[in-house]
Length: 312
Ligand code: PAZ
Image (tube, rainbow, N blue to C red):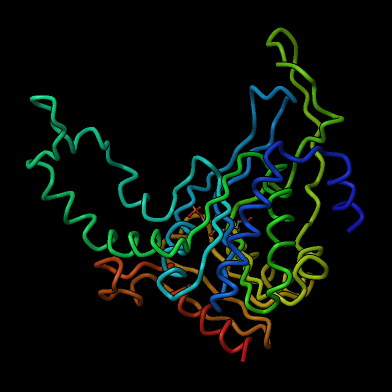
């Protein structure tokens, strides 16, 4: 845990930390008064800057699909959601149009902008199931977005959000689906300016401090905490998920393999380290949100049940 404290001492907080904190604190206050549970979802990958005046950075594969889809299902289950996400990754609701070019939906004539009838049918089909929930969420102000890019921003924001959620104790649910870099370059090991291409590039990586122990023991010791574990080798997956539960003493790990993460996950629970595997094919049915039930719908339903049990 010392390494974690050192991380916060050695690095400067992001410039907007106070406004992020104020926004989250107000969101928590508003929804806690109304008796809502609050899910804090972390989503997308963190970057690792190479230079202090950052031109280059290391990144990872995460698209944010898991977190963005899950946020919609938590909202549908009545949670207020803080969505801590990589700024360029998928966002709840918007993800349904992420592969579209909005300019293709419009036509312009006689100084009037119109939805193009040729494309509107397709558009309606796509958005009809999403828009009612989106409008409701906006009306209730039940989704609060906090964007990050680097691993530094991620940890600073996570700490502030945890502080804001600490008072609501068990009503808070952490769903940590972000792919956070395991290695980073300390600012003391980072050049100030753009590394020139004339010489060799040598980088010194340090282990990213394991903030999870701090989160479960100090930041939000009463919250319901779900983490995610990704591997590329199957034999490592469940043992690593179980080891994480032993180490961090939280409630649940969602384990997935890179190749099959869209179609299969295994939930490893703290009680008896029981495992439940969910596959997309067994989860297919019509739901309120999508014509085909997404894997995240099943994951979130199961987790909400476990959170209810935890609260009882
Ligand atoms: O963001 P995405 O939908 O492309 O992928 C989701 C995921 C694989 C990043 C997530 O399910 C996950 O496992 N996150 C934790 C990764 C880790 O072990 O650090």
